Length: 225
Image 1 (cartoon, rainbow, N blue to C red):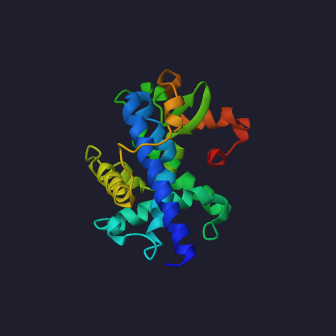
Image 2: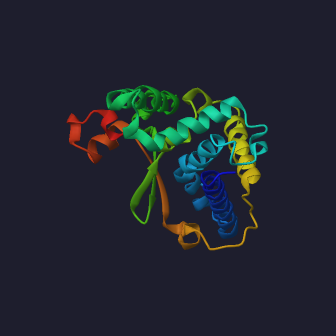
Image 3: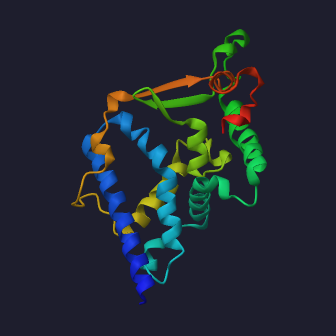
Protein backbone atom coordinates (compact mmCIF):
# COMPACT_ATOMS: atom_id res chain seq x y z
CA UNK A 1 0.00 0.00 0.00
CA UNK A 2 1.36 3.41 -0.98
CA UNK A 3 1.82 6.37 1.33
CA UNK A 4 -1.15 8.00 -0.40
CA UNK A 5 -3.31 4.95 0.34
CA UNK A 6 -2.18 5.00 3.97
CA UNK A 7 -3.25 8.64 4.26
CA UNK A 8 -6.64 7.90 2.68
CA UNK A 9 -7.17 4.91 4.97
CA UNK A 10 -6.31 6.97 8.05
CA UNK A 11 -8.62 9.77 6.91
CA UNK A 12 -11.57 7.42 6.39
CA UNK A 13 -10.94 5.80 9.79
CA UNK A 14 -10.84 9.22 11.45
CA UNK A 15 -14.10 10.27 9.78
CA UNK A 16 -15.83 7.03 10.78
CA UNK A 17 -14.58 7.38 14.35
CA UNK A 18 -16.01 10.89 14.54
CA UNK A 19 -19.40 9.74 13.26
CA UNK A 20 -19.44 6.99 15.87
CA UNK A 21 -18.71 9.50 18.61
CA UNK A 22 -21.34 11.88 17.22
CA UNK A 23 -24.10 9.27 17.47
CA UNK A 24 -22.71 8.11 20.82
CA UNK A 25 -23.19 11.64 22.12
CA UNK A 26 -26.66 11.96 20.59
CA UNK A 27 -27.68 8.80 22.42
CA UNK A 28 -26.11 10.04 25.63
CA UNK A 29 -27.86 13.41 25.73
CA UNK A 30 -31.18 11.67 24.97
CA UNK A 31 -32.94 14.84 23.85
CA UNK A 32 -35.71 14.61 21.24
CA UNK A 33 -35.13 18.21 20.15
CA UNK A 34 -31.55 17.38 19.21
CA UNK A 35 -32.55 14.06 17.65
CA UNK A 36 -34.92 15.91 15.34
CA UNK A 37 -32.54 18.59 14.12
CA UNK A 38 -28.88 17.49 14.30
CA UNK A 39 -29.22 14.63 11.77
CA UNK A 40 -30.97 16.97 9.32
CA UNK A 41 -28.04 19.39 9.52
CA UNK A 42 -25.39 16.67 9.37
CA UNK A 43 -26.94 14.47 6.65
CA UNK A 44 -24.81 15.78 3.75
CA UNK A 45 -21.64 15.28 5.81
CA UNK A 46 -22.64 11.67 6.51
CA UNK A 47 -22.99 11.21 2.77
CA UNK A 48 -19.73 13.03 2.06
CA UNK A 49 -17.82 10.50 4.17
CA UNK A 50 -19.65 7.55 2.60
CA UNK A 51 -19.32 8.79 -0.98
CA UNK A 52 -15.62 9.57 -0.71
CA UNK A 53 -14.83 6.28 1.06
CA UNK A 54 -16.78 4.28 -1.52
CA UNK A 55 -14.64 5.80 -4.24
CA UNK A 56 -11.43 4.49 -2.60
CA UNK A 57 -11.93 0.67 -2.56
CA UNK A 58 -8.17 0.11 -2.84
CA UNK A 59 -7.57 1.88 0.48
CA UNK A 60 -10.44 0.49 2.59
CA UNK A 61 -12.14 -2.81 3.24
CA UNK A 62 -14.70 -2.88 0.39
CA UNK A 63 -16.91 -5.27 2.37
CA UNK A 64 -18.03 -2.19 4.32
CA UNK A 65 -20.32 -1.51 1.37
CA UNK A 66 -21.85 -4.97 1.13
CA UNK A 67 -25.59 -4.42 0.95
CA UNK A 68 -25.24 -0.75 0.04
CA UNK A 69 -27.76 -0.61 -2.80
CA UNK A 70 -27.41 1.38 -6.00
CA UNK A 71 -30.35 3.52 -4.87
CA UNK A 72 -28.67 4.30 -1.55
CA UNK A 73 -25.47 5.18 -3.43
CA UNK A 74 -27.41 7.63 -5.62
CA UNK A 75 -28.97 9.25 -2.55
CA UNK A 76 -25.52 9.53 -0.96
CA UNK A 77 -24.04 11.05 -4.11
CA UNK A 78 -26.80 13.67 -4.39
CA UNK A 79 -26.50 14.59 -0.71
CA UNK A 80 -22.72 14.88 -0.94
CA UNK A 81 -23.03 16.98 -4.09
CA UNK A 82 -25.34 19.41 -2.28
CA UNK A 83 -22.26 20.62 -0.37
CA UNK A 84 -20.64 21.64 -3.66
CA UNK A 85 -23.44 23.86 -4.87
CA UNK A 86 -21.31 26.45 -6.62
CA UNK A 87 -19.08 23.83 -8.23
CA UNK A 88 -21.99 22.25 -10.08
CA UNK A 89 -21.02 22.34 -13.76
CA UNK A 90 -24.12 20.51 -14.95
CA UNK A 91 -27.10 22.47 -13.64
CA UNK A 92 -25.32 25.76 -13.04
CA UNK A 93 -26.81 28.40 -10.74
CA UNK A 94 -29.93 28.94 -12.87
CA UNK A 95 -30.46 25.19 -13.02
CA UNK A 96 -30.12 24.90 -9.26
CA UNK A 97 -32.73 27.62 -8.78
CA UNK A 98 -35.10 25.84 -11.16
CA UNK A 99 -34.51 22.56 -9.34
CA UNK A 100 -35.31 24.20 -6.02
CA UNK A 101 -38.44 25.86 -7.37
CA UNK A 102 -39.82 22.80 -9.17
CA UNK A 103 -38.56 19.83 -7.15
CA UNK A 104 -38.49 21.18 -3.61
CA UNK A 105 -40.60 24.29 -3.10
CA UNK A 106 -43.43 23.30 -5.46
CA UNK A 107 -43.62 19.69 -4.29
CA UNK A 108 -43.62 20.69 -0.63
CA UNK A 109 -46.49 23.06 -1.38
CA UNK A 110 -48.45 20.35 -3.18
CA UNK A 111 -47.91 18.03 -0.23
CA UNK A 112 -48.79 20.42 2.59
CA UNK A 113 -51.20 22.99 1.15
CA UNK A 114 -54.82 22.55 0.12
CA UNK A 115 -55.51 19.76 2.59
CA UNK A 116 -57.96 21.53 4.90
CA UNK A 117 -61.54 20.62 4.01
CA UNK A 118 -62.75 24.15 4.77
CA UNK A 119 -61.50 26.32 1.87
CA UNK A 120 -61.42 29.56 3.89
CA UNK A 121 -59.16 27.90 6.50
CA UNK A 122 -56.48 27.10 3.94
CA UNK A 123 -54.97 30.54 4.44
CA UNK A 124 -53.52 29.20 7.70
CA UNK A 125 -51.86 26.14 6.16
CA UNK A 126 -48.06 26.07 6.12
CA UNK A 127 -45.50 24.34 3.91
CA UNK A 128 -42.10 25.29 5.34
CA UNK A 129 -40.55 24.18 8.63
CA UNK A 130 -37.97 26.39 10.36
CA UNK A 131 -35.42 25.09 12.86
CA UNK A 132 -33.63 27.62 15.05
CA UNK A 133 -31.05 27.33 17.81
CA UNK A 134 -30.90 30.17 20.29
CA UNK A 135 -32.92 32.28 17.88
CA UNK A 136 -30.57 31.62 14.93
CA UNK A 137 -31.90 29.78 11.89
CA UNK A 138 -29.92 26.56 11.39
CA UNK A 139 -31.97 24.79 8.73
CA UNK A 140 -35.37 24.59 7.07
CA UNK A 141 -37.39 21.68 5.77
CA UNK A 142 -36.58 22.82 2.22
CA UNK A 143 -32.83 22.91 2.90
CA UNK A 144 -32.98 19.58 4.73
CA UNK A 145 -34.82 17.97 1.80
CA UNK A 146 -32.12 19.19 -0.57
CA UNK A 147 -29.25 17.99 1.63
CA UNK A 148 -30.81 14.58 2.32
CA UNK A 149 -30.47 13.77 -1.36
CA UNK A 150 -33.76 11.85 -1.40
CA UNK A 151 -36.03 12.42 -4.38
CA UNK A 152 -39.33 14.15 -3.52
CA UNK A 153 -41.43 11.17 -4.60
CA UNK A 154 -39.52 9.02 -2.10
CA UNK A 155 -39.34 11.67 0.60
CA UNK A 156 -43.14 11.93 0.62
CA UNK A 157 -43.94 8.25 0.29
CA UNK A 158 -46.92 7.12 2.36
CA UNK A 159 -44.98 4.27 3.93
CA UNK A 160 -44.50 5.50 7.52
CA UNK A 161 -40.89 6.40 6.78
CA UNK A 162 -39.86 2.90 5.70
CA UNK A 163 -37.90 4.08 2.65
CA UNK A 164 -36.05 6.88 4.46
CA UNK A 165 -35.27 4.70 7.47
CA UNK A 166 -34.04 1.89 5.24
CA UNK A 167 -31.73 4.23 3.34
CA UNK A 168 -30.30 5.72 6.52
CA UNK A 169 -29.80 2.26 8.02
CA UNK A 170 -27.66 1.35 5.01
CA UNK A 171 -25.55 4.45 5.68
CA UNK A 172 -25.24 3.42 9.33
CA UNK A 173 -24.10 -0.08 8.42
CA UNK A 174 -21.45 1.41 6.15
CA UNK A 175 -20.18 3.57 8.99
CA UNK A 176 -19.96 0.46 11.16
CA UNK A 177 -18.05 -1.35 8.43
CA UNK A 178 -15.64 1.58 8.22
CA UNK A 179 -15.02 1.48 11.98
CA UNK A 180 -17.66 3.71 13.63
CA UNK A 181 -18.73 2.50 17.08
CA UNK A 182 -21.35 3.82 19.49
CA UNK A 183 -19.07 2.93 22.42
CA UNK A 184 -16.07 4.69 20.90
CA UNK A 185 -13.72 6.36 23.37
CA UNK A 186 -12.38 9.77 22.56
CA UNK A 187 -13.28 13.42 22.83
CA UNK A 188 -16.82 14.71 23.05
CA UNK A 189 -18.35 16.07 19.87
CA UNK A 190 -20.18 19.39 19.57
CA UNK A 191 -23.44 17.65 20.49
CA UNK A 192 -22.36 17.57 24.15
CA UNK A 193 -22.25 21.35 24.18
CA UNK A 194 -25.78 21.87 22.86
CA UNK A 195 -28.95 22.46 24.84
CA UNK A 196 -32.14 20.95 23.50
CA UNK A 197 -34.31 23.67 25.01
CA UNK A 198 -32.67 26.19 22.67
CA UNK A 199 -33.96 24.28 19.64
CA UNK A 200 -37.23 25.72 18.37
CA UNK A 201 -39.40 24.72 15.45
CA UNK A 202 -42.01 26.70 13.60
CA UNK A 203 -44.13 26.12 10.51
CA UNK A 204 -44.74 29.00 8.11
CA UNK A 205 -46.05 29.65 4.61
CA UNK A 206 -42.99 29.56 2.35
CA UNK A 207 -44.14 32.28 -0.04
CA UNK A 208 -44.76 34.73 2.81
CA UNK A 209 -41.63 33.83 4.75
CA UNK A 210 -39.25 34.14 1.80
CA UNK A 211 -40.64 37.54 0.87
CA UNK A 212 -40.15 38.82 4.42
CA UNK A 213 -36.71 37.24 4.84
CA UNK A 214 -35.20 38.56 1.63
CA UNK A 215 -36.22 41.53 -0.51
CA UNK A 216 -39.94 41.85 0.00
CA UNK A 217 -42.62 41.06 -2.56
CA UNK A 218 -40.17 41.44 -5.47
CA UNK A 219 -38.22 38.38 -4.31
CA UNK A 220 -38.69 35.26 -6.38
CA UNK A 221 -39.48 32.24 -4.23
CA UNK A 222 -36.43 30.39 -5.52
CA UNK A 223 -34.09 33.17 -4.39
CA UNK A 224 -34.42 31.77 -0.89
CA UNK A 225 -32.34 28.83 -1.96
